[in-house]
Amino acid sequence: MSFETDFENHLKEFSSAPYLFIGSGLSSRYINTEGWSGLLSSICNELKLPHNFHYYNSKSGNDLTKVASLMAEDLFELWWNDDFFKDSREKFQEKITDKEGPLKYEICKYFEKKLYDINESLVEEYRLFKKVNIEGIITTNWDALLEKTFKDFFVYIGQDSLIFNNSIDVGEIYKIHGCVTDPNSLVLTNSDYQHFHDKNPYLAAKLLTIFMEHPIIFLGYNIGDENVHAILSSIIKILDKNSINKLKDRLIFCERDSQIDTPQISDGNYLINGLNLPIKKIKYNSLSSIYKVLANNNRKLPIKILRHMKSMVFDFVKNSKSKSKVYLADDSNFENLDLEKVQFVYGFGIKENLSMMGIKGVSGRDLLLDVVYNNLQIDPLQLSKNAIPEISGFIPYFKYLRGANLLDQEGNIVNNDQTEMFTPAHIEKVNSITNENFNPVRNYLIKKEAINEKYNSVKELVEGESMEHSIIYIPLLDIEKISSDELHNFILTVKPKVENLKTQLRKLICLYDFIKYKLNK
Image 1 (tube, rainbow, N blue to C red):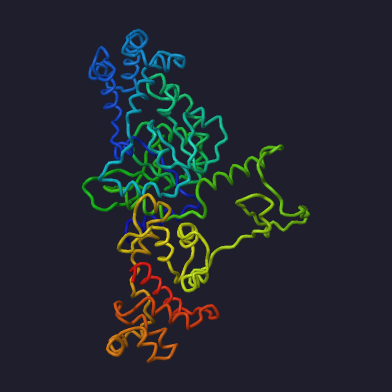
Image 2: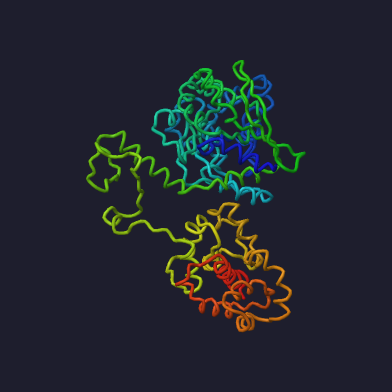
């Protein structure tokens, strides 16, 4: 069994989409950010502090939180008095609340130079990362990579923002160590970490529901990372034995191993608070296979719509004077309602139009007839994005993909930012289509050689065979003998509008779509 199958099967054990818990290793991978010690060393040089990083590191006993505290102490007077920091003072002095503020501001200023250009060798992997279907993200990273990647997610900065606000738990990024957009939010120095750990029980209580209801995938951390361990320890402390058992295999730790070609998933244990917690361990060199599984777990609706729906319902239930636009379709007698038959409908547009518009989905039959008669007046991009991936069976893809400019010269879906909405599985499915996909059942394949010896075109075959046999035999012709115009003319004579579109006729229409719009013949 392949890694992707194993990982997919494991995620199917849980009813909710995963959360990602992301550390600095992911930012280092994609935008070459420095590790913590490297960052502090660069800042020492950038700010012309009286001592270099090695001095502070040795004085602090290799404790980076204390290194930052020593640096902040030395920078404070310099920052307020040296002309080198004049511009910084003009922009930030009113927001300084303690001795550590200047160092935090200068670190954020240092990050402003980051262009967020993705490592060229990992552009394709990063495109897959942008497609993953997840419920949310928890991160200790300061940089803005995640919010630039998941632009529809709402960002909570710092512990207090998360603890004291009503999060929706869908499409959210929790930056629990702060963010470069808010210098005072950074968890940087020894006193910052002490304050952070003091509040860990409150943070743990806030994160508890997430950990109990979702698989948590750790990326960019070493399995023994102190930040992760501290948070998990706080969560474990507030759980009883039965609840701890529910965490079994929900924690998935991903660690890089440059010696392997394909990812490997295995069982493992995480020792915490005297307990051996069963976990899953994934070793990888490339993250592409992990992302593919997460991306193929497709959603019915975009994350921003799900967030909006949940926030509206949350507000409607919680507040007696809700401002949410939630309407009742009729004046039903609620006391006598059969709750098993109650349906919730989410409408796009104004309330007054919903009852008139109804809800109508484009069917496979609609698409097949449109390829023949060109009678659907719908944006091909919207069809390609929102309708076609949800329709099963033999359907035409290429007319709409071509119309939306999503095909390359070979007729394949291009893999770029314009096709982010497609899952890897959908792209692979469409790009793997050949004319052989439209062949008749196996019993007829033995006739292929004889058919090609006898006929050199669709026109000749149609003149020499019955309509029923023509529908079956045309796909057996060598592809270069099939003219899209001749095929289209024959399909019109079949009158598919009044037919029930049996499988082989559907295949024939799809073959026409394939030849005309993929092959451009």
